[in-house]
Amino acid sequence: MATTVFASETDIQAWLAPDKIQVDDANSEKANIEATRIIKGQLVGFFEPLVMESWVDPDHTPEVIRGIAGRLTAAFMHAAIYSEESDREISAYSQWLYSEALIMIAQVEAGTLVVTDDDGNPIDTTGSGLLSFFPDDTATAPAFTVEQFFA
Image 1 (spheres, rainbow, N blue to C red):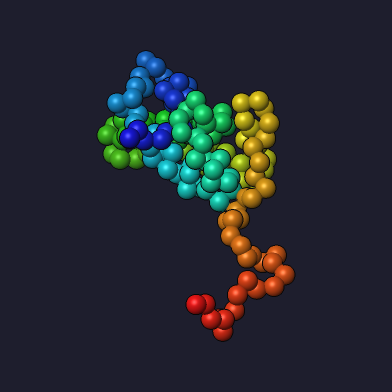
Image 2 (tube, rainbow, N blue to C red):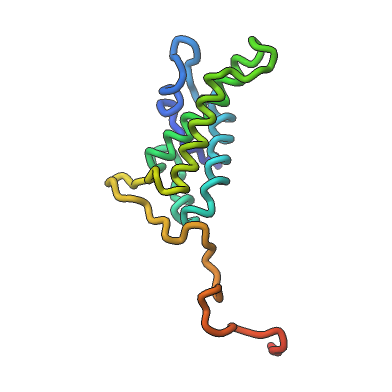
């Protein structure tokens, strides 16, 4: 079973100098998986689960999310490759990419950065942060009580 990742090699390479780091599946897979996990963890309560489950690969992932994933993956790769050169300090560029990605996630959650589908239509977030359970706070009467007996 293939692991879901949001960023393509092109999305990642856009943030790394090709003469210094050439992105391929082998050297980007671990970082890309971690970037995808972070994005899912941050946005799981914002988008409906079925929407996020439809993002099965870069071709089916919205451009904004791919951009975030590309930045995060590049940050992880850059930090790993250059960590030995600076006594385990994270490079300013790696940190900038990481911070930029997290800012973009916060902007998506705030609604100032809109995630659109392939046709340019905003992806519905009307269920943002809400789980689909009933009864909820809007129910007029309890569905059952503690004293109620079920046989």
